[in-house]
Image (cartoon, rainbow, N blue to C red; front, side, top):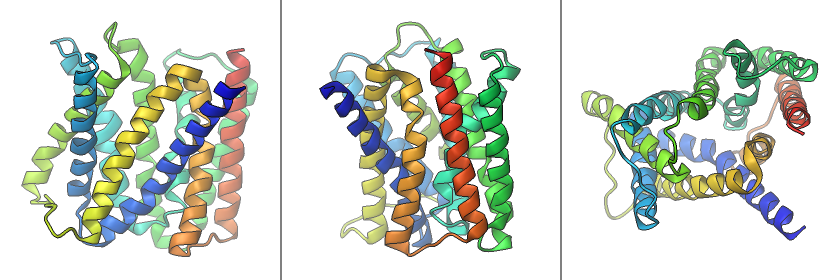
Length: 292
């Protein structure tokens, strides 16, 4: 019982960290930090911290067979989706962003069927259909001009879903998760660096610290801490239990968007929130039943 409570607490903390992310992202980018520059900091900061942690624990693994894996994970799992996310953040309400980001379970299942990593389950299919209705309902965003940005933001959960399906089949054997995460983030920073230089988007953190500087440093700490919790939950309870974090993230994002930024949802957006949450619950429940 005590272990279950501890795991649930970690799940709630991680959901709070991921849910607060879009608000911090939006604040930093709205105050002069370029999306590419912000993405770079979110990669290089946690990458350094996780690399040091992995090295101290003797769990940092690097070889020729790891480099292509790290690069692919860094590109699809971080560089592309995170940069798109940060580009879209200023144009979408922060209480909508967590919903879009956490559509990963909705994308994973049809893709898994396509590549034959999963078999067909009726309830999962129903959940996917409900999630599709929720996505269509995003056309009821507060401003119709936001729709193209919402559509572009859908690339983020799609990339995350592809990464989830890529990780296990192609993962080098006997590689600790913390080393995989560090390698992925280092690769993402390297991949984003040319765009950073070409667009002259580097954002220097200097003393005295400004509010955007504090936002970046806070996000780096949260991102690093979040990865540690992520690996702990995966180790203690497995990926099926971890997938429940999606609902916690969405609820936290909506609550924080209301409390901090005063953002509200219109009728169409409330319907979208409700249907997407329902879809995630159905997909996760059916996944648990399938693995029971």
